[in-house]
Image (cartoon, rainbow, N blue to C red; front, side, top):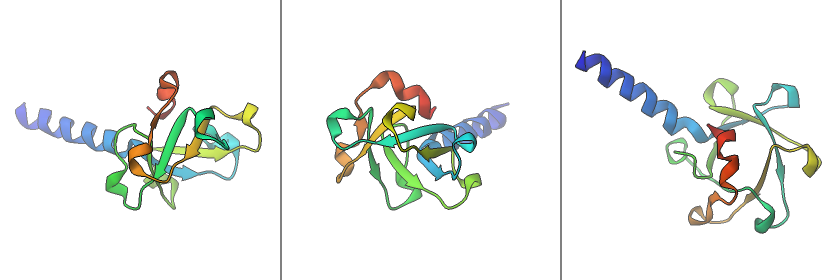
Length: 111
C-alpha cells in the first residue's frame, strides 16, 4: 500500500510541476484558453517569464516553458487579436522574479 501511495504522489507531483508547459495552438477552438498580450504590466492578470528549461516551469507562478508539441504541454493557448476575446491577459516580463499573478481570481485558468 505504501508503494502505491508513493507512486501516486510522484504522478501527482509530476503533473503539478508540468503545470506551466505551454503549447501555442493555430486555432482558438483547439486551445484550453485564449490569451492576449497587453502593453503594460499594470493591465495584466498574469506577469509571465519565459524560462529556458522545462524543469524551471513549475507551479502556477507565471514561469512558462513553450513546447513544440501538444502532447508535451499541460495547457494549450491561442493568442487572440483583441483584448475582449481573451480569457487571460498577460504581460511578458524581463526577469524571473517579476513573474506573478496580479488577478488571483484567474488562477483557475491554469489548473
